[in-house]
Length: 118
Image (tube, rainbow, N blue to C red; front, side):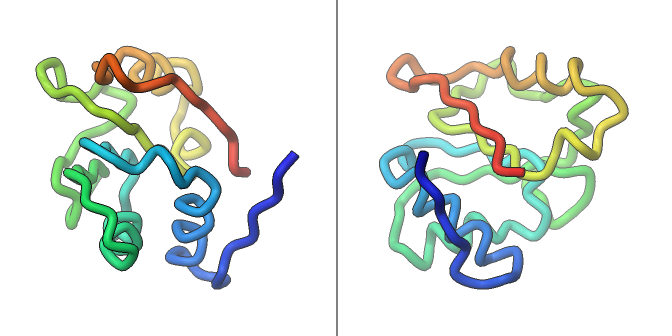
């Protein structure tokens, strides 16, 4: 088991910890579900990681405004990485949002990987 510590006790510190925990996955097109203020994008930019980032949340400043429980508007968009931190515990049901993640189109070079940070 590996243990990763956040560098700071704030939201950005959590994203630094996530990027450190999975250093080899940050490439291609990233969908950040529940992106809040887009701090994951800022952390990736700070580290000079070049990706196509798309943030999704219920309200601005997300790039895409959508409700995970009502489905996701990405039938023709392929993602290399899908991130959803602190999201499922804010939904009314667990299974429908989870199934929406499973149904997302991912690139053929992506490997499925799931972890629970909480």
